[in-house]
Amino acid sequence: MAEPKTNELMEKIVSLCKRRGFIFQSSEIYGGINGFWDYGPLGAELKRNVRDHWWRAQTQYREDVVGLDASIIMHPKIWEASGHTTTFSDPMVDCKTCKGRFRADQLDSTPCPVKPSKMVCECDGEKTEPRAFNLMFKTYVGPIETVDNVAFLRPETAQAIFAQFQNVNACARQKVPFGICQIGKAFRNEINPRNYTFRSREFEQMEIEFFIRPDEVVQKIAGNVATYADGMDTSAPQANWGWELWHRHWVEERLKWYESIGLGRDTLELYWQEKKELAHYAKACVDIQYKFPFGTQELEGIAARGDFDLTQHQKHSGKSMEYFDEEAKAKYVPHVIEPSAGVDRLVLALLCNAYTEDTVPDEKGKPETRVVMKFHPRIAPIKVGVFPLLKNKPDLVKKAKEVRDLLRPHMTVFYDEAGAIGRRYRRQDEAGTPFGVTIDFDTLGEKPELLDTVTLRDRDTCKQDRVKISDLVPLLLQKVR
Ligand code: ATP
Image 1 (cartoon, rainbow, N blue to C red):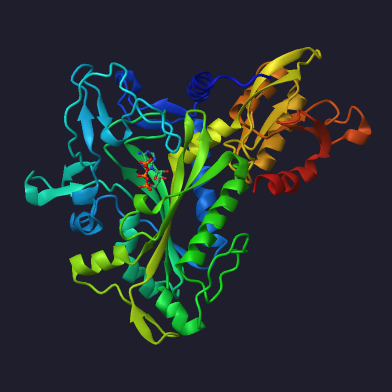
Image 2 (cartoon, rainbow, N blue to C red; image 1 turned 180 degrees about the vertical axis):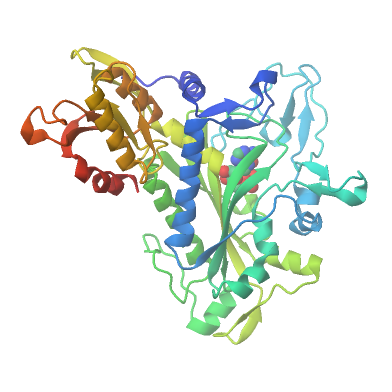
């Protein structure tokens, strides 16, 4: 089937998301509010699966990362130390004709090959001089609105990890190298929220700060610092790894993770920032980008940030951020590798990646076009649909409900008895449900050898296999975990 054009494709995805309850505009009944989105029943499940899978990958499958769940509003000095108060601003220009507001660095009439989705002011009117615009949302803590009570909604989750470094270090029984991870809301008063949920004003991040030894300490302990060579296996950490190998390790780990939820390497691109693009303290930064229908854009940044953040907090708080390394018999401020991903951008990538139109035979064998969301079973909102073949046959309905109740403790199940079976399959195809279980007369023993068996339908191939009810739980669990 011909590939739909970019805009047409995004329109179809946006419309499906609303119709099927993945994503709604926030406050829609009041005309919406720009840059804010709500997740409907299917979207909420999808997002939860993404978060849970990420959290499990870090804290359950690794021994060297522990979790944190910090507050959104923190002491305003945090943002002075991190540099957000002074530098977290985009230069911005206003168009005097159309009154549009644009990021000065993104306003361009010629598309850029590196960052292709630059904004274009349609009327091309005269612009004001660029002005700084702080992206942090301001509020007041307590009943009195004075400058002393100003606080900010966090623009990233990372800073709480640095601020709590010593508390976690004191209790977690970890030794450097180790990491702290966090999932949570972040807020940025973006000048131009756009591309659906891609650039929002309220969003969620999944961040890891992985603390490592400075290279001099690695040299002292291991006698050398390994250097990266093309094709090197970076999956098993070694004692002689400095920041470069740890950085490579995390890039590879994160790519593997994306692959495990259905974003294969062919859907992603790595963008290595050039020296001149890097922050002054950063040693390297790579963006993992997804090929969205509106352009190839960042999903996650993985930066080697040196000891900048902890040192800043040490300076501003007056509290030591040093770590005593027993093996090195020395104290130092750990360096950090930071994989920082956005949940909402990832959910959007998963929606774009899943959206498929294909042609399959209908119940009478006639070809029909269907929309199917091909989510990886691990993150699919609903794992299995359960259908009695007919709703007016009490024995079929009773058996189908038994099967639903058997599966429920293990996975999300959707029970549906309304309408023709083909229609019910299509509804689940659009929701991205990878498996369908149908209870028919053979289940009830019409053919005695098929008693207590059901058909198990595969969403992508539409193939149906006959399986025993008693085999369903292990069979499905193996596919959806
Ligand atoms: P961009 O250049 O697109 O503004 P950034 O480089 O400022 O992003 P980071 O500060 O590195 O982003 O944040 C880490 C991650 O948080 C990003 O990779 C992205 O997934 C997510 N993120 C950042 N800003 C937004 C936003 N406005 N809306 C949705 N997700 C965001």
